[in-house]
Image (cartoon, rainbow, N blue to C red; front, top):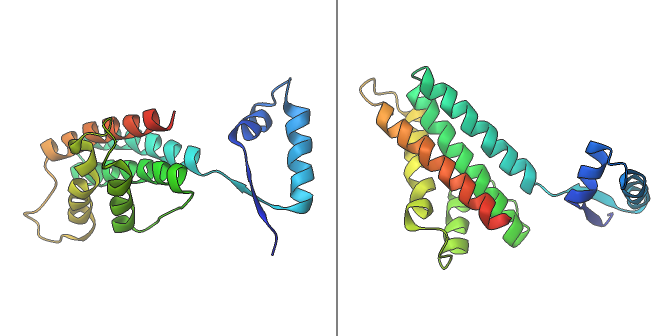
Length: 166
């Protein structure tokens, strides 16, 4: 089994932007490492990019009245942002919803910049996802107010996690 080596995000940026100063060095470093190791890319940026893209989708869904979908998407934006924080702090990728929620609670319990409202966000909005995905009662739906609040809180949640990672 080959040893895994994580490719630094700065090296990835050099390659993607074809940075005039660092491109040849970064390309040579990756090529050299690829001959001897299994290369792994840090998923933090991908998780945050996914979160931000989902926030844009949630805004669009709200604008056209898709409140169930907007609530679900707000939750997923938060989930991916939480995965970014978890990976940065533990080097683990947790995929199960409950596992992400529990690990986020553990990691942020003593973090003064992560207030209780944000700490409760995933558990609270998971209920919106459950309504959107599983509830078949025609009288049960995510209200416009619930969806709007979820999307706005998700924006703050993602921004705060990005701030903690900066």
